[in-house]
Each structure stands twice: as structure tokens, then as C-alpha cells.
Length: 198
Image 1 (cartoon, rainbow, N blue to C red):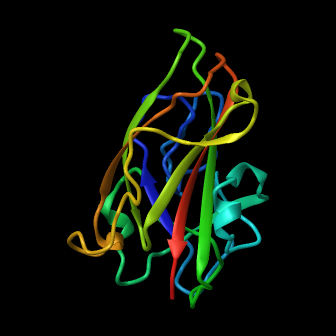
Image 2: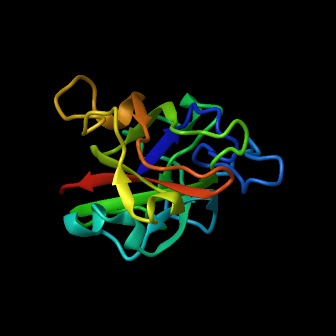
Image 3: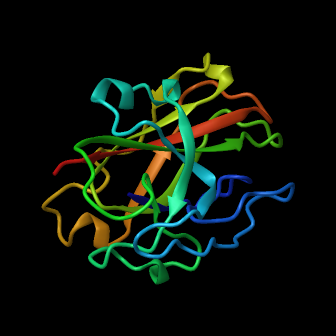
């Protein structure tokens, strides 16, 4: 399970739980979360790998996985409530509540590299909450050959166990940079990988 507040000034890089972006970029409009027990409401901009969970080898090459839209859900009662943010909501890999298998759960969001000024790199400062450790953030763009690369500038896991309140009850800041080639106005994808252990 994953919720992110991407505090970036990159048009089209949207927070979790929003309706689908349009020509003007992110809508800022939150999806009504599915009630406890499941529903059909999906995130408009974030997807999750399917089938899940992934193996470690699959999670380390997330651009080779298949993705479907993530559910927007009412959080588990132990998690930080959706009301903790007016900009994002929890997204989950499954419809409904219950136990998940151990493994890696990967989420992806696509955006376009800005066309002006021509970028040579980028830095994204944000915060996230997840109910297990976020063990990797990867980046993909055609200018870098379409391969997935682990981003720079951030220690992993983002929200390590034993560092205060549980990882799912607070925001965890992150800063990521890209050192791979970029092309203006080209598509790009960020992948967030979480580890589930039960």
C-alpha cells in the first residue's frame, strides 16, 4: 500500500488518489475512496504491477512488469488517515481488505519531461507514507535507452523499520535526483517499490 505527496514542480507528475490528468496537468481533484471491503474506484495517474507480488529480481527491473490502475482506498484503521493530506490519498494493489502475500509491490506513474528550459537532470523533493518499507525508486525514459535505473540522492529504505512511529503513520521525506540522459517533452516513468513481509 502506498500514498505519496510528490512535491515536484513537474507538470503531470501527480499525487496519488487524484482523477486523471488533463491537458492542463494534474487536476488536484481527489477520487472518492472505496469503502472498507472494496469497490471499483481507481487512481487516474498511478498504476501497480500485476500480477503481484513481484520477486526481488522483477522489482529491480520494474519497467518490464505489466501495470493496471491502482485502487484508491479507505485506509486500514492503523494507517495515517486520508484526511492527513488534502492533496493525496492511499492507493492499494488489491480490491478489498485482507492479508497480502510477502513480496514486492511496485507502483508507477508517468509524466513528460518539461520542454522548457531543456533539462539535463532533475531533483524531486516529496514525502510518502507506506505500510511497508519503500526499498527503491526507479526512473525510466527513452533517452536512457528505455531501461529502469535506481535514482540517486536517496538512501533506501525511505522509511526504515525501527526509526520512530510505524512507517504507515507518518510522512517520510525523500529527495531523488536523476543522472540518466533526458530528452525534452519525452515520456518518463517513476516506479516506487515496497516490500511486504507477513
